[in-house]
Length: 223
Image (cartoon, rainbow, N blue to C red; front, side, top):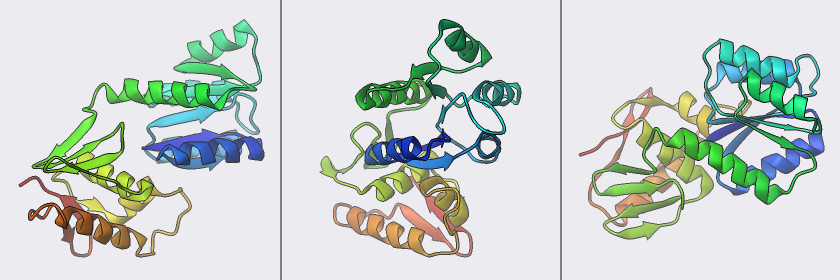
């Protein structure tokens, strides 16, 4: 899953990014409101974590303008403004939750997970293709009743392919989902991880799931 953090305090942003990545999330960071708003319009995110007091465009305006454009991505407002009216304004603008600084990281992660679960309620928590399954809570792949550990990047790639089962996914699209927005999409790092995934699958199954579409990308097929 991919999360956008819009936070102008660089130390706070780095702290949040590190913690989320340890929970297997891919994280983009924007340090001002305009950049954050543009990224939210351009990229597909599962959650947006948004400060209120930002350069160029404040968090309330971002939230309101995203909702006006029918972008329904969950938004968690994270700010030092702790007055009741600030919370009311943020929630009325379209935010899904509001948390004040300073905060306990355990609570922050729990709130983020809750918003992601709410979004996931429209989807299944266990993704399947044939005898292969992926638990989005434990981040483990299972084949023939055998649990297989995945690295964060392997998990992110397999999750995205399963969510787009039987659809061709371009290397660029896959790279943008798994890595940060400014990652160089011309590298072959996705191919390396695909080969690692195939290797782990082949150890436990004779079925080929991930196919290369030459010149385009990959498709995960359900046999």
